[in-house]
Length: 82
Image (cartoon, rainbow, N blue to C red; front, side, top):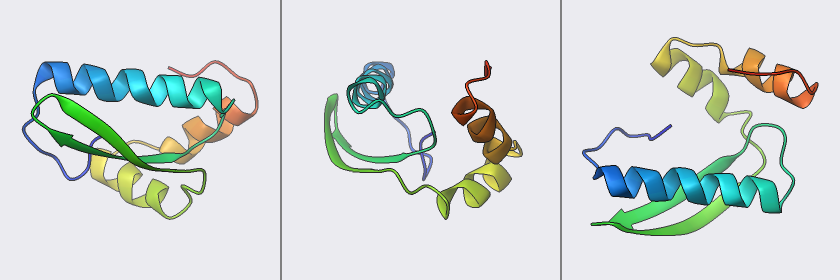
């Protein structure tokens, strides 16, 4: 999820997704978390990773009209999430 929405290069989006996945695996994160990225061109840097996503979830769920809180709860319970 990229907020605020911006025009990004496909390569930049691939970098962001890869970095988020690597960070989650390295820290063994199974629930919600926030990562703030800074991107210029295709250069991406992580500026923050925060495991407290409680204030972000309602906003993101409303913005995308999808219940991310429910998905996070399923993930934390070890259920498959699509």
